Length: 592
Image (tube, rainbow, N blue to C red):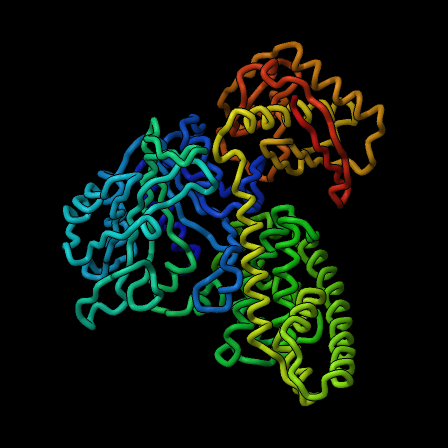
């Protein structure tokens, strides 16, 4: 079984249970300021978990592209990844625990062929917000899991969500595989320790909505959200304790061996970081992202540069990112043919990687010069005393120079580094970065608030108005919404004149003043296109889509949420415009 076959087994199983396969959403969330990336399969489905009808029905399944960077410093071990594929199925107010748990057991034993005695499970222990999950416990017992292989764990282990400060959430029941049951009984005590007992899947029972005041309220519909990581499941299936030994990674690993003249077993950490980060970059660029010094573009730049640093540590001194990217795109066992956006955007992927690699190598050369200057200055002032961690960290921050390379240069000159101080500075910086990242979760579509819904609706009016004033070449390329404003990116190379800004603003406000009802209809995507509905954001759409219309002025394929009438929006004002790079413009606007 390879990765492609594992994904097919999962999807086919749930299709046989009445589910409809939906397409993977983009890694770059549309109209969602709560996070920079799509980090879970349920994230694009939040409006439907909260009660909005989904055009494909109440039972859904897919393989979702996902990206998480909160554990970026852990990449290099045997199991952490930035980009990964998540197998998921959902019940939107249809079946619940009594159906899902027996299905999970059936899937593990009859389709992945695990022995019943290998399976351990955990359930939510209960707290002030929600009771102990005895229902899940009793259901696991009913399918044959004995009491000594069912553990109750607290919220930090067995509760999922919300993604942001508010939104759908609930207790979960996690499934683990004992990779060596022949060694005798073992007790699972807390979470996945990547040892003998390894987490393989997770059933989330979304029956609560956490509001903006921190209160947990029962949802009007009970939902199921499951998740199985492709990389981890394939490794467990074949008995590997290293994800990078599977066919997902081996073509990439072998290509790194080829261009570095090094072997994987002797260079585990740099090989893993290069493979992981370049794979993530390939998928990020394929979904429309470009490198920058802000937000998601900065993360992309950081991943590419981290990979290049590791390449230098294994003596890859020429540009190599595009070579590794080609190995990702050509992976016949997993990606080739499944994700057409990879091949369609191949030239762009190579171009961005090559440009970023050239820029960073120049920066590294500057860093080397700065290290040499530091050595000369330090010897003159302090002699053979160790270089301070602060000075080394400043180099690391400014030029991306790996600490291992700094130490190597110092060693050549019979100097050492205060590594403890360097590690402390780096740790404090990481904590600050995590705090800043957490700020991304303070507002957005995840809480379905009234003002977010208004701004989302206003983007439709803005999109239509821009096309009427500037021309049909205008296409939405992204948006970001907070409680305070909307940000809208679109294809247009020239700066808008004051007169054009005025015309667009007046056109939006005209539609608001006309008090237009907003209608919603589900239809075939081909019929939506024939009707004139806009569908530019992203490259792929399901067979059945939802179309939101505002009279004859605006019609777009969208998943919502929207207000009922344009009169609810108030006054629309454009506050700022700027370049968004690559022939794109960006507009900021507010509602008053």
